[in-house]
Image (cartoon, rainbow, N blue to C red; front, side, top):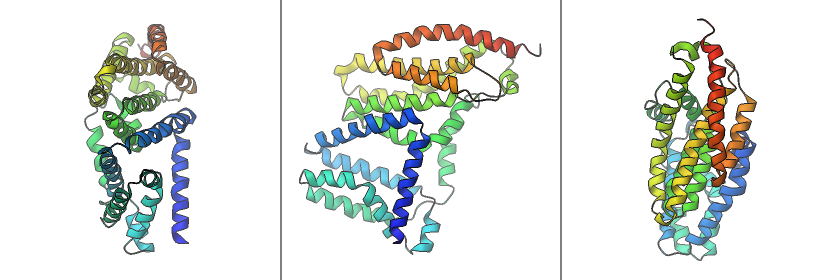
Length: 318
């Protein structure tokens, strides 16, 4: 009875996280990424050697999740040790993978997976502060000037980690890298939906032209560094080199669009639904690579609009 309630709570948490993604990202996740992963499993599990790679990746992800759990103390009050609760949770969420293994007659691999899963469950998770340390280790490399990323990564760290890992799995399929890049691009574009206060805006004492160039330069630099491992992994499929470079350019172009849209519609210390909406439309155009040229042309218009809009606020006290 207890485990039924816990599993129900876990599913409600999953549904809540999907809902909090926003409609566009949720639809993309359920309609594109999930079927793509299912197709990947169907094609690769039947190939000798890939089964152990897939199991290794799945177990590694579960170990990382388990290592950073923060409910060990609570669950240990319900069951000591709480390993069986962990096992049932991981087993339920691993059901699609286990069913796939059994479907292809990989009974030994399925048994091995279950045994290793039970071993992980007896490992005591890290102390409560582990997540904070992980977060600090990530954001300490991000300049304070890129404050949008600091807050955005804090709020979306699990999703970013999951889909970045999906992109690194692109060594097996170019489409996994493509799906990862699309989802990450959409996620990072949402970081620019909230506007800083006017005091923060004028603190740099820069004019609109310098401020926009600085913002674009800094953000594109760190965005490119973040995407570089995904780009290198994707180049394993060298026959798609034109598609890979075009996708990378579209992702950079889309980030520039999000920055320019933010300042084109800037209003101090507020949140813009319009900016987020037009960024979502630009994302839809960018995933159809030939249409990304229109996003580039719009960026030119947005640059002058953002410059004109910022001049009003930057010159307000001069």
